[in-house]
Image (cartoon, rainbow, N blue to C red; front, top):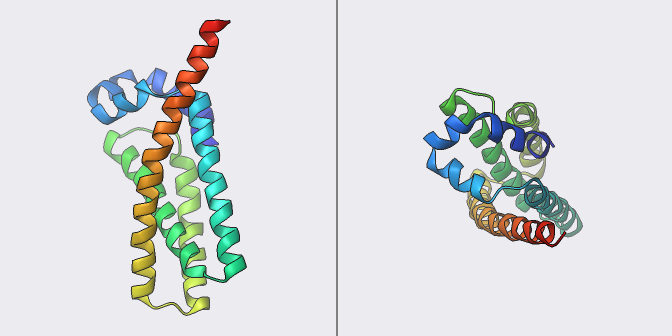
Length: 155
């Protein structure tokens, strides 16, 4: 939510940072609140599906790997903020969720008795899946933005 609500405002107020970092400027080209909201919804639904499937089939190692990948995502937001020496949308949420995630992952891993190698393999596979999904949602955001832009031009 923090990202959905604050990212557009943050982009508008931090044009100097956007110019300084090329990857941010590329993101801004394809950014719209509508597209970003759809991307966040897709990731939220993916988390629900992963959780449901792992509970139903009792393959908790997939959930652990997915939440380790998600925790890395949170850590990246914190590191981004440190690098640019400013608040970024998602920082507060990341700081709040990271310790909870670490606790839950640790508890689940110990309760289920998975070996460290199983957890590492699952985490690596889930990080790869997360990166592929990130590429997908960026394409999705671009398509949504184009569609919204075309609909606004018709009005």
